Amino acid sequence: MTTEPFEVPKNEELDRVVNFFKAFGDRTRYLIVTILAEGPLTVNELAERLGISQPAMSHQLMILRQAGVVIGQRDGRYIYYQLTDHHVLTILRQVQAHASQG
Image (cartoon, rainbow, N blue to C red; front, side):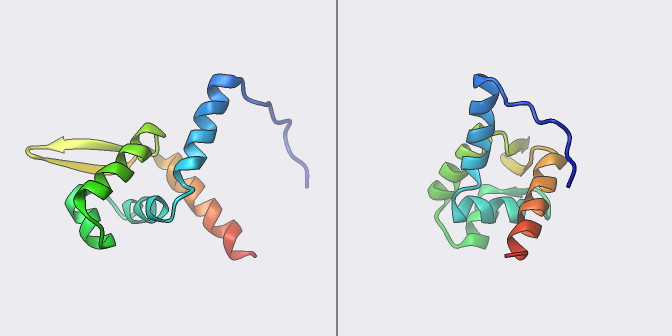
């Protein structure tokens, strides 16, 4: 396998990368990301789908927001959460493909 040279990130970028991967290090957060790959949902919709309380869901979404995995878009009284961009979906697919090999 040939690869391009890989540059080790500087401290600030390294912290962002580590926090990004930490966000995936919890079953509930991983399920949230997987569900949001289907499209935007509100806190209540996510909480209902996963069978957890709204405050617990809000806490998990805060961690995902801080890591840059999800964003919230206000629509009237509701905030719809979605994946930040296509990179998150690409990473999710790559991780699932890697995990299915084992």
